[in-house]
Image (tube, rainbow, N blue to C red):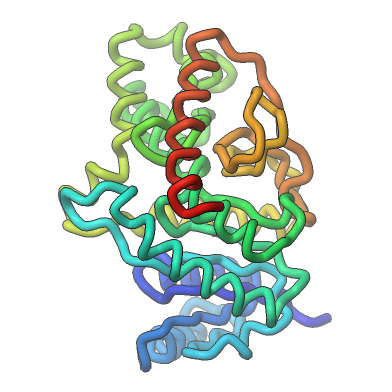
Length: 308
């Protein structure tokens, strides 16, 4: 049986760490693509040389060409310039639009049946770009944001309550950025809503910290996060390759769900071997719904600017 193949476009911190985690778990062979000569080749060779010690046989290829990505089961797009301190996600918009458009064209040419996971920022506008350019069915173009945002929220809940992260479930809706909508009512510890365990003030602080989780790390490191983003990518890769049918928050193309039409927005979806197999609609309070619509409006402003 041929091994599965995942191509990662962009061999920076996020891409290379995702490659490492995919081969560590022996999920697939990995092709690492980057425009900088030597970088994907060097990182791939370094990872290959960890194989005998870590015990994985997955093949890792580094390349500046797209032909090696042919017939990938999944392609992860992390390419783009990262945020610098003081830079808003919108500043990234035009530059990363051109990058993601070019990457998507190359990917589709080589892997017409692949599933795309887009990670480049500003996330919601970039996944919509990939969807329009690829002309793939909407279920095969997915944005990675909610898995990361909810992991941040879960981390803060577990720190606050001093309980295992395994006990904590939570998710966030909306665009990936300042308008995201953490949902405390649906955040639980072993099935107990956190609204029963913590005062509203504490919950609001944690939700706010989750919302600004990316900016907090940019401030400390002077560059974007990569460990948690790469873990989030790998969870999605694992769920798709192994057809696990997990319900995860992802950026999905909505056509009327939640009263939003023709836009990629973060919502809970059932993820499986075909990509997004179902958008899960949950009931929202008026306040939550209006926060979600405000978030969608912020996404629409960006997609309008780049005409996707």
